[in-house]
Length: 115
Image 1 (cartoon, rainbow, N blue to C red):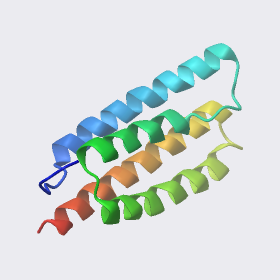
Image 2: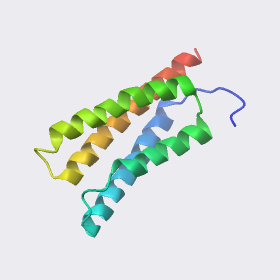
Image 3: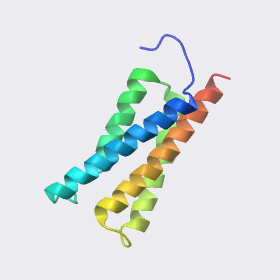
Image 4: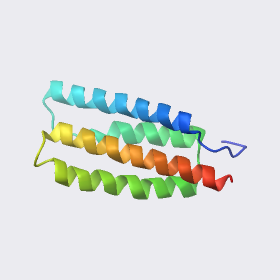
């Protein structure tokens, strides 16, 4: 449990985005090698974000706002990208965009919370 409230730094958010991108790319590559385009690319990224949230920054308000903004981005982009791209590529691109939005919102809200 975090005893002090400290905002998420933009550098930490950037490092988390890089980690999420690596996890997303690895999940996409493994699913492509296994020939399983139906499995979700998003799940490992969500698990990584959830683990980071629970262990480093359990701020419920910013977390809820981030989830409520990042998730719709993923859903809307998946619907628009799948007809144009390979399913795995569309899912990965939508996941990356949703992750970026969620991390920006979470970081901004955590900083506002501590202002």
